[in-house]
Image 1 (cartoon, one colour):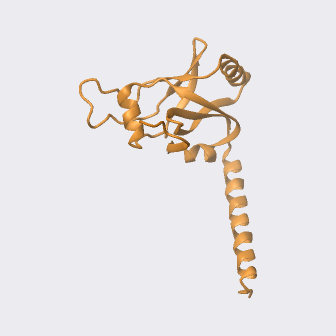
Image 2 (cartoon, one colour):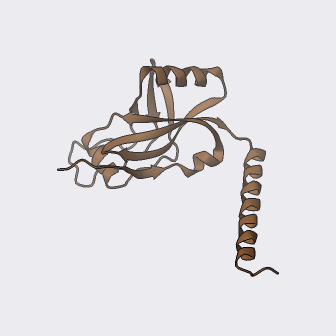
Image 3 (tube, helix red, strand yellow):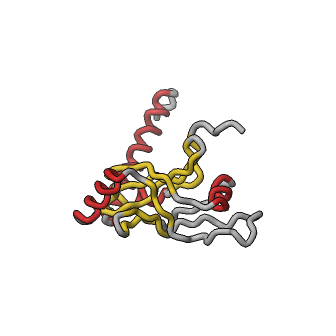
Length: 159
């Protein structure tokens, strides 16, 4: 069977970009069981309450929901189990250092398959305040209105 090529996104965390200011991103592998991989290949996963945390010098992903595989037997996995993240030691040390530094957290942005391997995109993020979120929404609305006006002008539908 030929190996998959490219990137197939399984799940993305849209709310993370709204709630956090993304400072840096890292690609990490995940330690998964067979039924978890099959469930992911079926396109079933949720990153709603997920976060990464350090324990004993290693990183773990908490709260990610991968539903049980429907054709699985008694060997099926637990849907919200803690999964180990696979990164290089230098990257792990850098992430741990920055989170201990203060005010930063590790949030998963996407789960995807990269050339057949299950990966998760982890972001080093800082929580946004309510007024920051409002400013972002206002800025996005203004840009959308400018683009709309430019589109009308380009089509000759100017008022």
